[in-house]
Image: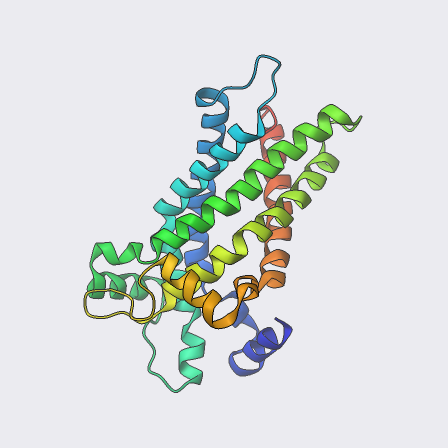
Length: 253
């Protein structure tokens, strides 16, 4: 990871570490909003809590999976644009001509080559990854927070939120890294004129080929950078989200 970061800074410049930030923000405007609202709706209105006020972990897990899958399905176009932009540095270093020059150009090029359907290229592994990540993030945060509040004397403050988000970030990274590897390989593979992948037929095919050619641990390539990305992200999101709810005099998550 450090060698990759150093290479990007040395060959492309320090601020290239933030390449793709614009479509990433667009993605999270959709993704984060939908996943949180959907999870709370399922938890409070559809799945419903038990008579004693508890929310069984299996219901929490189902809510997390559904919320993550739906959010990523809607946000997939922005995620695809982000991946295309982030790969431009590697293409230039390999002497290949650039494919895109910005967020809007990447968006129009994807539509031009694959139609509107092309914006959902790689959506299956992307949705699978999001379902696993949110199973880890939303479910773990919700469960850990309830456990801390009911089994300790800690109040519903930033200390509880920090401990819960730390658990959520670790579990989310552990569950999401294999799907992240598959998603990235599928979304970045070359395609034919019809938008079909030339290397992998789908997520299962990519999974089988990766394990067969590189071994099981290849699915956890990049776990450390994924974790150190998810850990501060989870901490920042949950602390900010809980503080905003408190400021608006809304109940805690």
